[in-house]
Length: 343
Image (cartoon, rainbow, N blue to C red; front, top):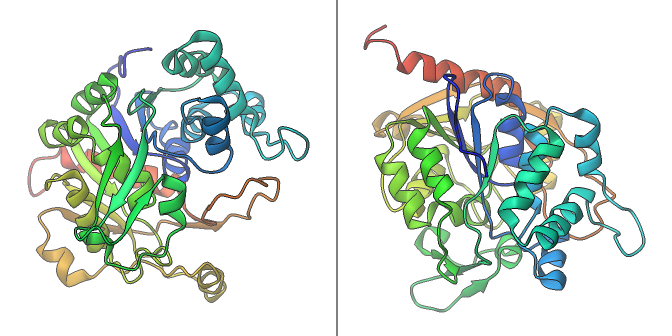
């Protein structure tokens, strides 16, 4: 696999998986070619879950989304996102099937990602966080509730406070050293928006990734989720989300938390409430006392319609950031961080 970074542009490492990373990467590629997408490898739902269970493949779904986001070839990007509507492949995206086939042919998921990157003419590099076959586990201290698998955790309505639960990957993974290297070499590390416990947590709990986040000289930024998740993060503020990011990583490491301060329209709010989701509030008093900079901006994007061809059940939010606005704000905050104090 290619080295994470080469040229003398702003080097950005994005940590996450799925829609959150897709949103950021799609816009950040217009600002720099030096992008490294470090991807969650615990996904076991939807098309990805079927391919894992039936073919013993590593999870292709989040990797595919990041590859497509960084692609500079519109026609191939459309092909990778094409989802079969019926028959044996009904519900599967072509990109997921191709990545699985490439893994089988090459005997290496890393080589499969590299080959797919060449086909898609990717602007940057996509790095699986581990190349081990891992599953996510979530448990509470009294062992009264133990949840196994990303799909199960993602769909659960927590009976107890998730802030007291621990996440782990089974078996204990060997980190992809390219991910660690990308974090150390980056100018900016961005924690993408996403489900705290199923998208971001599986990355942050890997000890080597957590350590790299603490040690890197990069500006470390979290793009806060737009809305709460029903049954999991109800009532969470921006600070609550950031606190969980750092708890899962086992340390305080954030320099900036970027959050939306745009007020949604009544129509948007009604649509959100149909999903049991509510706009994440800034909690200004707590933000002022935080060790990181809280940076508000207008980041609310349009509501995305659900893909009806995705017939393999999987939870996907319809609520998105304005990707261009977020990318511009990330680059602006980074540029400002380079100025002498007081400028």
